[in-house]
Amino acid sequence: MTQRLELPKGGFNFENYQRNVALEQQGLKLPTPTKTGTTVVGIIFKDGVVLGADTRSTAGSIVQDKNCDKIRYMAPNVYCCGAGTAADTQFTNSLICSQLELHRLATGRETRVCTALTLVKQMLFKYQGHVSAALILGGYDVTGPRLLAVAPHGSTDKLPYLVMGSGSYAAIAILENRWKKDLERQEAIDLVQEAIEAGIFNDLGSGSDVNITIIEKGKVDNIKGYARPNRREPKCRSYKFARGSTATLNLSAVTVTEGDAMDTS
Amino acid sequence: MATQSLRVVPSSHPGEGSSSKSIASTANSFGVHDTFRLGTRSIANELLPSHPLERRLDQWNQTQINLKLTMERRIYGIHAPIRHLMERNIVSKVQRAPILPSSNLALDILMGKDETIEFDDFLNDPELSIEPMDLHASMEHKLGIKF
Image (cartoon, rainbow over all chains, first blue to last red; front, side, top):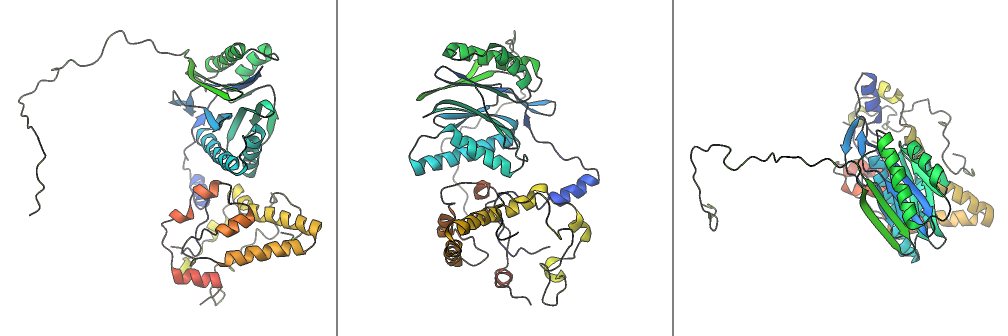
């Protein structure tokens, strides 16, 4: 056994990497991470930003969660949609969320979306795409409605409508066709719903419900299950067992009033 | 690493001599691998590739600090980096015994890390480490004493 002479450093630990390489060379199959095969969408409308996401998370060909939350809080005026490895997007989100909170405490100002974006892209660039998080950041700050996206290697986009995830091809088709400048709020919500539903129906990695978040000046609306296109028909009969379905041979009941005193002898 | 480089991120190519192996870090006072303390040496293990991120993350902070010091030197003259390094050196002298974690708040403030949070601060936190360590061996290692 090797003896440790210095305190271990925090952060990522590569101690087992070489062992795992050796095992893999001998034919061991290593487990794969859970991916959010995803459709996430963000668009800018007249006075704000609408973010939308489906709610399916997958591991290979298995649906692992039918109702997971892909639109998450980052700052009171900034929300974030995540695609990629589920754990990585969640940790990236919560890490940057904490950094922004500390930054707000230090500066006493409202967070700007580009601050969040810079923190995310610098962090992702440091890890060279090994932290596989693709995020869409949407928010309303002093510069107005802002919509930005980061890819896992740290490259960023600033566009009036953005999509990410495996269902992005289906969703971008809808947005390319129907998005226009200065949409009304309800029009924007309908457009996002339609784009997400295109992902849900045409991409196997996306499914279940449509979650929508609307960010306007000083106001955020989170709508879970804005559309539920995949509700299961309720069962026609009840399959609960009737009382007394299992025969009992005898019955003895003990009434406990105060509990027995502990035997301490 | 060149002391006056303006590199922003560590080089992605392994540096010179990275393919050669040395026992300098595991040698005892006789200059041979210390089998009693560190166990038998496995060449096969040492030749396996390391994770592509490992070296980058190892050198990340040092590269960034180096960049800042080099820029300070070019803008303000050599006194600025010397002064900063001296301050950091003074502050990092005050530490607990090497098997106990030291918070080193003053050093964090000097490095501008007191108001940030990163993966190192909450993943694999050394303060929560349960690995037993030998105080005497750690102290000898820290002071560079070899028996």
